Length: 351
Image (cartoon, rainbow, N blue to C red; front, side, top):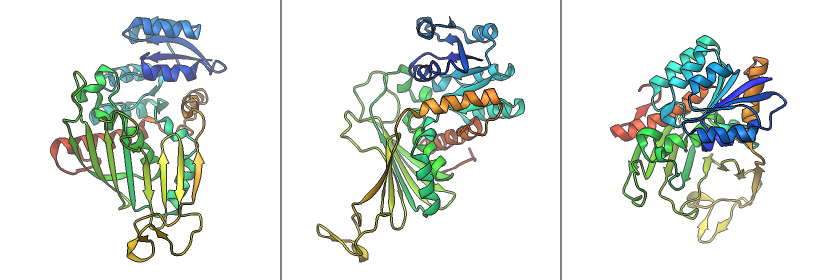
């Protein structure tokens, strides 16, 4: 049985805790750590095992776990990972891994040197729609991707301060950036702009209300990524990612479904309202018929279980987002932030 600990017993910690208590066939939950000790005590009570701690170093030294789930805010990364690496403890870490590439690269270097098994909390990669989506992008030449994610301001105090969270693009929309990388390909250059002044009702708020990034991929395709936390209802914008080819498109709703338009045969020429599809008047979809693939269940269960089984077997080949790959998504997001700061395009890998 693997001895497992959790560092960080807040919202995302609770998400993983809900999975881990289902894995009693392969793990024993032995320690829970949070600066608010009552949170850790709640986990220990619910798990029916383990001990609560307010200091992760004390917990690690006493329990000597085989694996640890790091579920802390973005600004807390670095020291924890290095402490675990020093003791050759495998770890699962929540995104966004770090708020600067120097920290991420230093951890990655040590992970590779010490042969630590790692996984990153990009659970969307384990959904039921990524395979048909990758099949679509492998068989069709994608020309343009349009990604949108809009919502409100989360309740966590640290989230409202961009210096602590990285902003919405880094802390939340990184899931979309990672999913685009996983299902399509690597970005080359980004150019981003942000805007403020639309969210005035949240005390202590100091981050972007909206940002828009233009992305050039190594393939030559372009993308726009728009994200904002100004929304007060779900009617403000329809958050999705569209992959557009010369003759069809795929709409992806994260952890929900994909709709593919253009693969179902349609009339050679059709009229939609006053718009004629054939020729240079093509402004509407040629066919309203679509193929739909649905996601069901909690992809995080498979994500977490895959990591634990890799620690048991010593084979990490089934982990879809190890630290090295997850850091590339962090670099993608941080490059956008850098462009916002400088007002200049940023080439991935050169900052």
